[in-house]
Image (cartoon, rainbow, N blue to C red; front, side, top):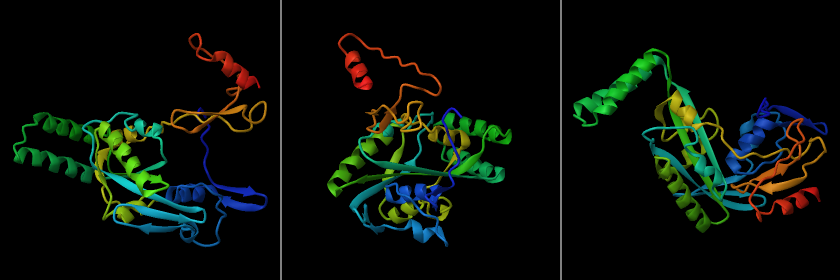
Length: 283
């Protein structure tokens, strides 16, 4: 209720039934939002409305409005520890990106096998990192006590640009952001097509770089953090008063009301532009 979340479904627009889940899936595969009428048959052919050309390290999305280029990263080694907001640096990146994740739960027996095998490998190799062996013992105890679950996790990051040269710059910035989060990433090349289709729900067989992590780790990777967007219409006074720009470059639709409250507070040091902002909003 706090975030105004709702279940997407079928909507009627001027007598035509549109599918909101299809609109989301089309945005994931093409990078653009567009109305998707509900087809009579399978949704797969309806989603594939753009031509995708896969190269060695990049792909080209050809649509009616032109072409865009994209590249993808996958996680090669996970961070030593996770926390909510680990990937928040990507939110302020000055380019378009699509981050997708999937998580398939393992049975307790399979999860125990994974942790035990890793622990035995460290012991057999006489690994000096004794703390890791102790942490795996604690993890086995937590697993048996149902304090967390283990699952196969897959994360991919797709970056898009208008030109191939712009894409190279975007990939460099994104790689640094992921490295600062403690992740070792690899640019998808031979597995690029598989990683691209693995963005869609249910296509687990195409996941090229799946790894076993705990449900706690997955929760840290998926905190649903984002920048506020406001409310473009349907406010107490109708449409939003103004469209502002967030630190990520995304729009924020400003209204003097927040829910049923009509109070607005503006603060800042002398000379920071408070009067200018007030005059702008009132005009």
